[in-house]
Length: 329
Ligand code: UFG
Image 1 (cartoon, rainbow, N blue to C red):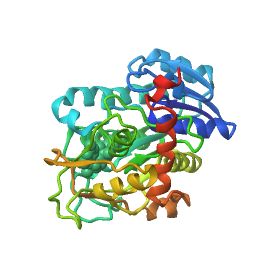
Image 2: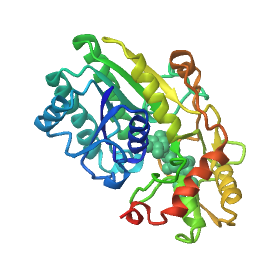
Image 3: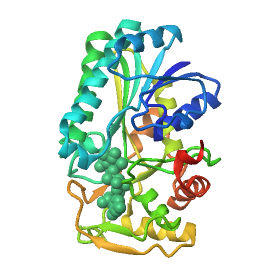
């Protein structure tokens, strides 16, 4: 396949590029480097460009005879989306509209899109099935849900073949430790805990210990980035014109914030001091996937089922690159 990976210099996108390149597919990364890192792109050609530049997109798709697009580019911080929704509608909805129009113009009819469990809002039932009502509780979730609807409308009207993959909590790093997570500022739990283990932070703040869960802290479903990448490849192979696949990508197992910290203590051997802080606005108590539909549809399931194994890959990356891609030159 000739695949355009939009946002391929980002955390999840770069693991996708590595998988596609490693399997011999032609891969082209398109990224504006607003969040991503040039050094994270390990295979294929890199094009620095913005999704609003439709002319460039069409030119790149035609020049490389692209047949499929995998679209990771997005703003993805819940709290920021509440403060600055315009950024989310612009970078997610408007930019994706531009991408879809460029695809139409270039005659590219297949796309796999990064959706999110945030489209469910506060779910009524956990584990969450794809049939759960989608009522986001923040602009980030809304922006992703709008795109899911756009894709369905384009499939109906223009025969687009699409998959919308609703990720739970992406985590971990490449097995060889060459690429991994590097956000600035960092807001995600596992890298923050590992920064404490590296001596870069004094402690971890636990955002709320009074949730209605067994230990009072929030529960999430941590899924390894390589598992996410392999699901995208499986989805690409199943796409059919005029129809969409909508699937949760998770392990089906939840871990509390305290359990994550305990696992990081075990992996790193560091005591990792904690402080209880107020709840973070917009955090649902529990988000865990029912991942059975991905198995039925794609014969895909997560290979990393132990949090300890996931954290071990992240720890390898953070130890080798304590300042992230700044250490890759
Ligand atoms: N947490 C802490 N302390 C921290 C950081 C996080 O206690 O310093 C807690 C959060 O409150 C949450 C859990 O750890 O309960 C996980 O938080 P993350 O920020 O790592 O991940 P989220 O679940 O908030 O976010 C993920 C994705 C988002 C997506 C969201 C959907 O990273 O892109 O799920 O709810 F929008």
